[in-house]
Image 1 (spheres, rainbow, N blue to C red):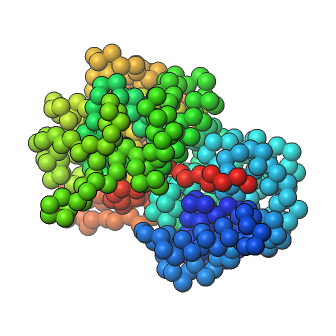
Image 2: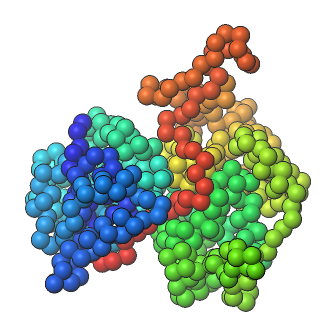
Image 3: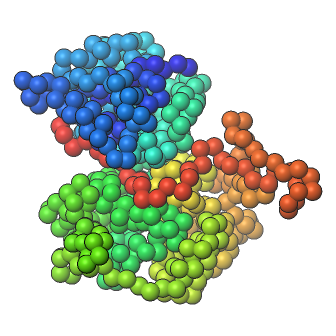
Amino acid sequence: MKIQKIGILGSGVMGSGIAAHVASAGCQVELLDIVIDEAAPDKLAQGALAALAKSRPALAMHPSFLKRIRPGNLRDHLDRLSDCDWVVEVVKEDLAIKRELYGRLEPKLKPGAWISSNTSGIPLKLLVEGRTDAFRSHFVITHFFNPVRYLRLLEFVTGPEVDAAEAQAFRVWLEESLGKEVVPAFDSPTFIGNRIGIHSIMATLHMALAEKIPFEVVDSVLGDAAARAKSAAFRTADLAGVDILAATAKNVYDLCPNDEVRDAFKFPEFLQYMLDNKLLGNKTKQGFFKKGPKDAKGKKSFLALDPATREYLPQVKRDWPILKELKGIDDPAEKVKTLLTSDTEAGKLAWRCIAPNLTYAVNRLGEVTDGPLNVDRAIKNGFAFELGPFELWDILGLERVAARMKFEEMPLAPLVEQMLAKGIPGFYRWEHGVPVAQLNPKTLAFDPILEDRRVTILKRQEGQGQGSGRERQLPAHRPGRRRGLPGLPQQDERPG
């Protein structure tokens, strides 16, 4: 499959980020947005292009690649899409707006062109309602994560009308040309990454407020210490936007009435206060945290929002020796196991933040995707974690985690109960530290994880080091140790 020209409808944070990334991959790009100024109808797209040139960290791989992007508008320039191989819609999360746009777009498309939406909250079946068979047969959801250049996750949702072989060819192009970890997801609200990742942040927020634990103290055990992004939980919300966190949580609350912990997605009054007062994170320069004055040595300081006084106060520091110990551990599995099995205040806090999400992830199998591997790939690549929840179950030991949960009177996932009854020790079968099979939650059998032939496997010679043969395989598109990158998608809030 060859994709050489791409149309992007919407030039907000997400649309312009996608434009920069596909232009960096060698594609010509038509970047179109609504008209807000009759004297300068291309103003929004031109402004987005100018902002890309100044972005830090850079969203294009080289400034010269931005020359491949031509700005325009959705009123006058839809004809430019007639020779596009792929058109990506990234407009406001409003079904009526998207449907109206698709109606104008469809007559302009060339036969066989792919159409996709970057939505994270509107079901695919609703988006294509009323469209022709030709449109539906090439419509998918391609849900990028922000910043597009640096977060590798791309959730991929297809409808029943899409040919499986054609969809697979498109997925291969997305992987090989854009360097994405393409994860198939079911057509369920917020898909995989945000359904499970936002649960983690929202459940942690409710706990922190109820127990009056400072946000910075929680973050201290959920960042590097837990082999996760340095931005941990609340700094991630600030980076991505507190409004985006809230909007995604609202989607789950509204669209998933049978979710067993639905109230975790309900806004606490404090979150509504943040929204009402524009405490939206980095975009408004204040959220859960904000920059404080420099100290006597000229060093930057950061303040934390105190829920009780609703003022920004100097951050609380906990002198927990285990956090210093964890800095000396490079192996993610050893680091997290050390933290979560520690009988220290830090270890117990981390466990209480992470354990509910382990159960939540298990309960989503069959609803958001079909197996543990896709969940782990989504969380690692979308939130810059080094371990996914099912890898964590296996590292800690399924029996031990279940026993601790029962002892602490935490709910246990029905699937875990079934696994314990049948003596199934984990969600993967491992060889030399590599998962080679994953649990099928329907049959409780193990399905082989097919080796990706595009992945280089490093082998040791006989007699060298410990053991022989394959010692370690790097999974396709394994994320590096990126730190401080948000896992939430940005939505374009402008109408149209």
